[in-house]
Image (tube, rainbow, N blue to C red; front, side, top):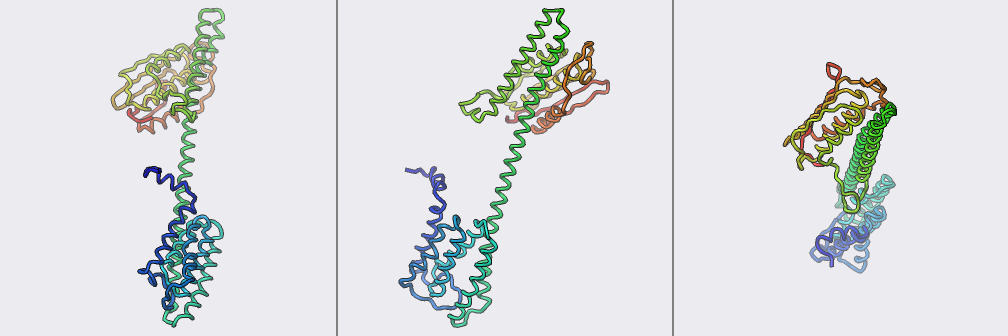
Length: 399
């Protein structure tokens, strides 16, 4: 037993021919109603003729091909037109004549190939029908009447062509939206990978480079290598978390059950990791993250992460201050670094800092992330040579 809620899905799973057949059957049955005899389409001035033995075949030829009006529109139009011609020449003038404009609309909407040729053939076939009807009639139908009926048929074709163009435009729009969505998702994934890989790998490079100068101090060397190991483990954990998010089963109960928002205290862990890489960081956090902050927490975390990564790369050893304030309506982040350096700068330690060159993806990505949530972002050098990153991120945006 199919419930009313399941009926639409069940109906659309049927073959298109089965779904189109009821219209033809309904029109065929209505044509035999006594009240509609002689009340159908009439071209020319032939007198009405009562139904006879041939009527069933003629009306069936007009109505039943509507079942294939979407699968084989040209075939449907040819058969319906033939039945309509016999209907008019015999003088039945049945309600089944309505099948002709329906077939024209369907052909204009669903015919994919030889559209122009089909229209020309149909137009050419109308000429001998009009001539035959004029000769068989009493001459009461003028040429303007035949032309008017042809224009009405052309209008039905035009309606079908308009439906076809509308459907094509909608399909193109959906394709464009899908492509834009894929592009946006690829960009988001690239940003996530950039944030995770750049920060952790930069910290590992700095720590490993520092270890080269600690061979005479085994205790400090062991601490540095431990920090490299811990950073590597965090990088693997973050990458695994990101790959879980890309898993199609994520969030369905069969995949990872993690969430994108960083857990509480993650900022302090991030700052501590940066300190262990040799960067003096002053950290101040006011307020506590709220559950309704949504993706604002993640964006704030990424702002701090990218800023500390740049401080490690270009101002290693320089004082860096991080201030984060969690408000009811917004999160503000400010990262201030003294003495902006560059790749290869000594950072005041007397040792070169091995650091890859920047691609510009990080700050641009942060600006876009903050803008998506309706916030404000700025990043640039200070007058005294330092570098300041500021962000105001509205809270409560869904992830």
